[in-house]
Image 1 (cartoon, rainbow, N blue to C red):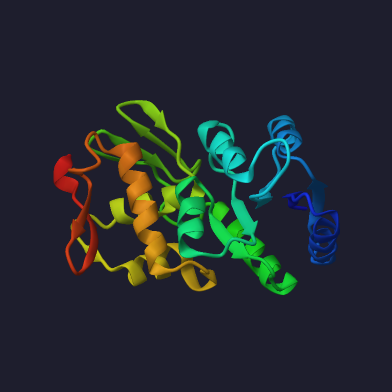
Image 2: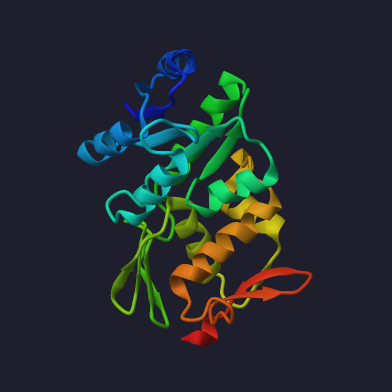
Length: 231
């Protein structure tokens, strides 16, 4: 049974989310304080975190950053829920490591659908589980781990999936929509703008000079390409 941690200071909303998740067969545990949530996650990591941004103790975005800096927790799926629905807020949440972003008020059915989608993506597929090496990058899809020059690179599940997809299709240009279909699939709830956010985050983590990338290059007016010539 998958265990979901609900980090939400509104107790009524947390109980509503818990009820709907438990009805769908999940184990759901509410926590109402950001600091308490971080301690609980580090002690016993859940399968997924539903995270409000406005929290006592530690704000949601700070908690998100703390999880992404932890090698043991960097691949933990994070679904942000927030009353702040402007695009800049969504982009900021994704930039700091969230895997999806839901604006309040939301449908419980939609929330459960997004939880299921994120959990599916967190499971490595049976296809192409063999580790690959390109240049100074090593990608192991079985463990969802990446290394650069032998040093670990902390990637979220979706960051890894996007990088692995591009790296296994070198020299091909993919539009934002094509990447959404290939990496996020039919369950996607993000926009083409989100792809730019993920590419920027990947460049900051794997490129020596993110402003002049060797691997993840932009093809103006078309999309993105993984350049294997960096090998």
